[in-house]
Amino acid sequence: MDNQPPQATQPQYPQPNYQQVPQQQPITEAPLGMFQRRMGRLAYLLSLIYALAPLVLVALLQLVVHFALASSNSGNASPNALSAIVNIISLLVGIVSVVLLIPVYISAYVRRLHDVNQSGLLTLLIFVPFVNLLLFLYLLFAPGTQGANKYGNPVNSYNYWIVIGLKKP
Image (cartoon, rainbow, N blue to C red; front, side, top):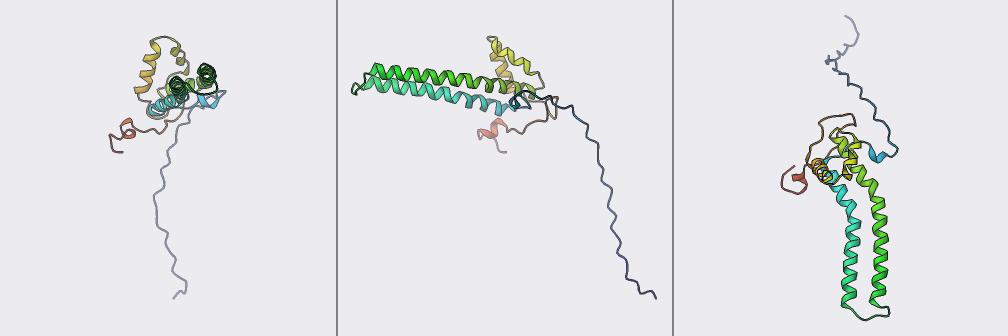
């Protein structure tokens, strides 16, 4: 008899089936990264709402100060001087907010247009009256392209109904 130990047999596993993933066209680099990639419908809506928040806060501050100064007649400074100071500060904050928010709005439009596989140059339509409203509504309700398009892979976004709580995930 042979005194050799029994050899263990290796289990035979099927060979993995690796499929070739097609190579995508590289996304051309933009000067600012905020104009690349894609943006879903909900992210588009929320980015526009968040961008409006500073302007809404300035308007509310303006209203509160106006009614507070109108109701009180006491104080060292005259209500007209305080009102003028608040008006100037509100105007400066509003102008700075608008200037800083222009790239945010344009980026949101460009990225949302990329999600529906359209060129970002269509953002120029926001300067055409009435067409800008139609573009806004189209980008708000049109679903993005399924899968990868020439602007990249889709982004994860939630369903409107799930976010507002009317549908279970």
